Image (cartoon, rainbow, N blue to C red; front, side, top):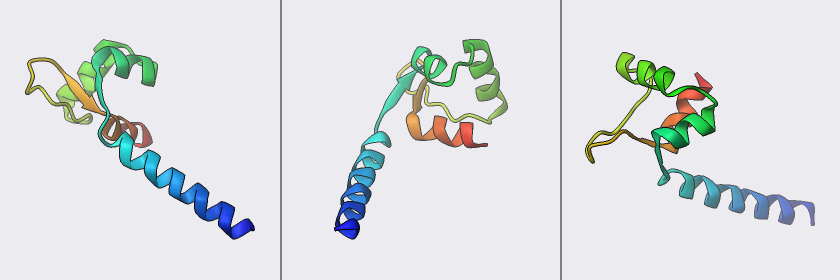
Length: 72
């Protein structure tokens, strides 16, 4: 019984992790998520410490990139 619950929880976690990789965030979303100011986010992008996509004409961030940045 215990191993069945553990396996189900792992399956749910893998599903959530795979979906979070595709989530794109705007600068405002990142500021809300990290509790950092937009100028701080811009500073880390300029230094290369935080990955950003500018292909659409505005700064977009993958949630995975933000999580890696926050982990250090």
